[in-house]
Length: 501
Image (cartoon, rainbow, N blue to C red; front, side):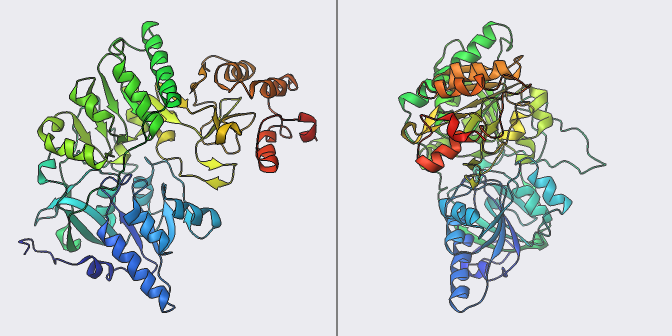
């Protein structure tokens, strides 16, 4: 029996309060801290409504991607009308690409203010996971912040999942701060990675809390695949490049804070940096902490980490929870509006490290769409950091699909990050430093240092045909690699004459 002055509900009772056509702001930034029980029950309700011929779909807003219990269950129940700002579930991805679900791809730092501005309409419900709730409306979040603080404040009504898997001893690990909107906005007072500027709890009017659901569910973060020789080589190339930058005086001797994207390559990069004795103990100012960061914090290779989410496997989360007093001095979790904010990225001089789907010879990066049309996941926070970084790095394997696809192409099929923001490109083949290079120099260095040897002859032939003009780019020949794959299933052995016209 709860001593709190809020109704204790089953997940089904909570889901029954939500109506068709309403918009929900869910907690979750990756599966970390995502609501789980209520969205599952909501999916079951949608199936029941559909079975008797009644419509039931809701708008879904989160911090970023989530897990099976939220994006997966709702997508499989065909219960999502629109989704923003980021997703990674295969069923939802298929529905987005078929036009069944509307998807608004957004920079993660912009989502909270866009919600406050009213650009996405009213938020009817906030459904948020918490470790603890106070009678006065204080909410202790769990393993992420995301946009939860903004949803809690803006929503007409609030449902809270109190998850016993996350202990109340998380108190002190969150730094909840929300900027004012123009014209009253002032600077964000984060001047060092470990500056605390906000509150430990989200504070809302307790009258908005419609009920509490008690759960005991682990985050659905599964960790990442073991490293491979290819990912290890990319990681080593990044580490070697940053060490050289430090030795040449272009990075201060005390190093600079790092931002790292999500995935196996990001893990390999951090592992290589942590293992390199030439790299001093570094700080991280990023949006996600993965398993690889936990030992780096424990052994002092990472001295402090500011993040939006702890995207840890169950094993790593248990390791974190067992030593929470230690990690409380090493980690702060902030809202995505703060963790990804351009003002802070530029002030702190962050080195950004993100991954690409494909990169063209001008240095433009596609990080969202396959063959120009099919959404993969979304831009996430990569643009927030890339556009404002001290040094912006994009990495990827030079080929995919057993060599049938080149990640280095004449012209990207979709552009998310332009040549004006991208400074360094790294594959397992090597490093292309684009700083101070004109377009023709950039094209040559990308081909020779980053493209796979199987594709270098075709790429060299392409730029030799385009000697006039500031950019080595042809509107007719630029998409030839993609057209060859769509027609023949392989980008290799391009016959340029086939694509002229």
